[in-house]
Image (cartoon, rainbow, N blue to C red; front, side, top):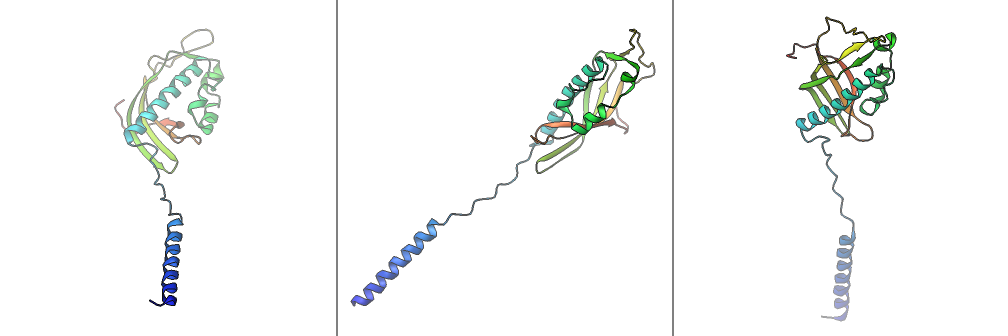
Length: 182
């Protein structure tokens, strides 16, 4: 093989190796992570919603036992907007009343479960039993309405907290108007 031809072949071999080395040195494309669900299942979302509502309910009962004027014990379990709604004076505050006893509840069903990106929303239908809760006037007399239902069907909306999408906060509580076996 003539010397010139050997030099060209060697040059091509060296250039080809450099191209191969260059191609190997290029960073490979990083895989795009797939979004992870906030809750793995509806059952997991139900457990989280039930746990949050239980803490909310206990704090709400405590606040009302003190006359309902200070809702700060409820704050860790509710959205800012719902806390503002709870701060509007109601019958207890207006009359100087308070409650005794505690309420209980039974989750009936999840009405809606939605999760998108970093947000989850659960609408929980439940039956709140207030049969052990009495309304007491400032003079100590029981002013609980005789016609009050002892079990209240409620629809509770819980949404992800801004700082942690797995932490649910009560954002709305309203009457559950569908026919329900509470």
